[in-house]
Length: 207
Image (tube, rainbow, N blue to C red; front, side, top):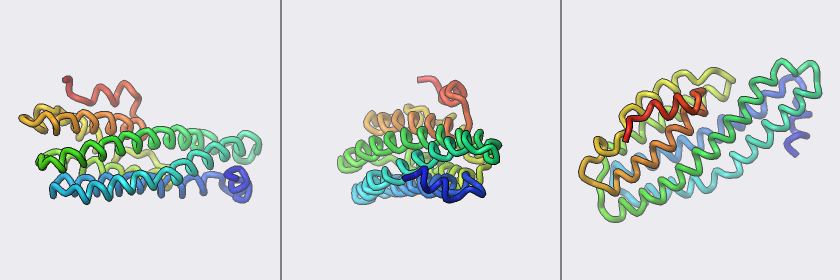
């Protein structure tokens, strides 16, 4: 089905994947904003809403990946579109990384829901997660036009540098366990924003 959609847009095979990319990344950003609000308000209901958003996002992520792969195939077959192949291949890689990030975000939401239900407060982590959400907004804007997501990458590098669980949540091991999950999420988003796996991991403070 996705290949048929790509073939119906011969003037620019990047158009449909870009639109799907923006929608899918916005889904993740919205989930992270809601989770940050839930942590800040100590609201299990807000975090439950974030988790529902994350679960409902899978079709958008799957469609983005399928469409991007179909567009790569089209670019291989059509000489006029071969110049677009590098961007389309990056779209595939980014879609895979965003799918991984969303799965990590769902795990984080489930753990955060339990932590908040037990009345643990995490204002510092809420602010960290809001910054991650804003960086994801930046990433959505970049993928929508095929631009280098430099602003998202720089924001994420700044966030990553502060992800020491003993600093973010000095005396609460349950919140510290959430920080560890945020570290994994930020690594995925850094890679999606153009950092190498090594650069993404090195941006985190040592444990």
